[in-house]
Image (cartoon, rainbow, N blue to C red; front, side):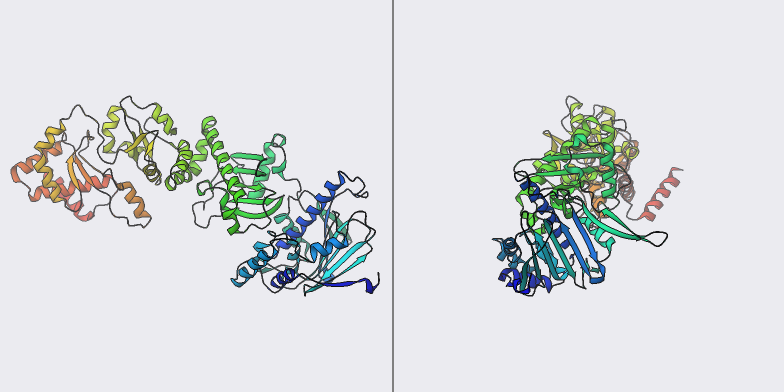
Amino acid sequence: MTTEQVEEKEFQTETQKMLDLMINSIYTNQEIFLRELIANASDAIDKVKFQSLTETDILEGDSDFEIWLDIDEANNVFIIEDNGIGMTYDEVVENIGTIAQSGSQMFIEKLQKQEAEKEDAVNLIGQFGVGFYSSFMVAEKVTLITRAPKQDSGVKWESTGDGTYTIEEIDKAKRGTTIKLHLREDFTSDGDEIDLTKQHNIERLVKKYSNYVEYPIKMKFKEEDEEGEVQTEVKTLNTMKPLWTRNKNEIEDEEYNEFYKEVFKDWNEPLEVIHSQVEGLVKYSTLLFIPQQAPANIFAEDFNQGLRLYSKNNFVMDNCQQLLPDYLRFVRGLVDSPDFTLNLSRETLQNDKQLKIISKNLKKAVLKQLKSMLADESEQYKQFWNEFGQLIKSGINTNYGSEQEELVDLLVFPSSHSEGKLITLAEYVERMEEEQEVIYYVTGEDEQTVEKLPQMELLQEKGLEVLYFFDEIDEFAIDSLREYEGIEFKSVLRGDLDLEDEEQDTELDEDEAAELLTAIEENLENKVDEVRLSKRLKSSAVCLVSGDMGMSMSMEKVLQRMDKNMGQAQRILEINPQHELFNKLETIYNHQGNSEELAEYSELLYSLASLIEGFTPEDPVKFSDKITELMVKAD
């Protein structure tokens, strides 16, 4: 070819605007250029394979499809080559010299806006089919050599991105495309400079972004042996066949386990695997894992939740939070859809209809798997619940309506009748007493503590089952849920239990003790809201309960630990009219009225009841002195 045959052309105006922004800007994620070029190479091979189905001679005897990477370290050049469809002279002009996209102007506007706002404009690349131009983020000059099938010659295209490019016909023996990047000196990745002439850096980027491209990505590695001779080894840098694209009936459990441990850096095997391939309005493959153990930081604000996104086996994004609700943040895995663009921006994700469909389906799949585990593998579900149950409860607490209905049957709790096992709400309702109208529950630290609570005495005597809530979030979730299958929840520590005790005539006692109770209430002004005779105590003398409305005392303690001042729960002091201590109070009042001694007893009763609830007396020293005085008097 002679120099007269070399043509110089100008870029389309929109193309030049975009190149100017790329060349003159500093981005934090320049490394994605390699993913874009590999994705283009893979697409080119896809096209020639498809065309060969009807044109058998198009392959020209070259059917071993490969993508080759190379480095010319001496000249600071990076090279990528494929044996895909290639391009003709006119196709190069059309596809490289211009942006053949109706949305190109929109792309430029978005790019300019993000640059003005100092945002990472790289997130737009790929959305408008301009992946090739990302080369100019890392290269001061780009050379493209290509030949389409059945062509007598190839085409050479070259540009420094300065507004023009040269194009000429040249000799090229084989079909496909070679791109040479004459590298800039300021290449960075996440703000750190990276040398693209080092093979280990290229290998890392391939594994990060293009590990599952279905064609081998090869590179020659040169190493010295023990005798100092240079040996050349060809390495395939990518895994190629993604596990998620294979038929799950042909995959062994060990393959899933090894994939999970390698990709998600977990020593343990997954508890459950969810693998599906969906065809329809939206096409996607998904591979999800439920871990055995929760990460230590799963409740931290900076926990990196979310799934990985792939588009036709090319890595798009990590930690996509939009695919699963927050209460399923424990799920690890990935979603691959040909409908995803290579660079989904966070803004695009919020409004992507296809992503919303996939998200809805994924949530259903995970919840279905958990319900199946609960029904068929109770021990396995118990293991899951111990690790992640609080997240399911948080979903109950922060959602309403249909979202709660999807989660409620996953709830399990220990109970007074479960003998150490966890039971569902459905199981509790199934064995409720015939005349029982509510679902009883009690909050506390552990089984031993709640079973000794005074408030439990009447329920224990009647043999009524009580759910045990040991997690801080339990009561908040149930308070949000309010009822199950039309049956309300009832705290043992709140309000009146509305249970008859045949041994007590509380109405008569209440009338007779009205003045005494009023006196005690006056002595505890600003400490309790009400003093009344108890219908739930059997052997204990006194207890504190909260009102039916508002927060409970257990909620108050949780909020205090969180440094959230939400006020104080209503406090109702209940006294057992059958206890000897009540007789003592009546005697004091009948002989002395509301005396100093009755006031001291009132304070002691309140302090004792507060201790049972886990509250420290306001004046521990004074409380200790009063107990000592009583002991001395008793002596």
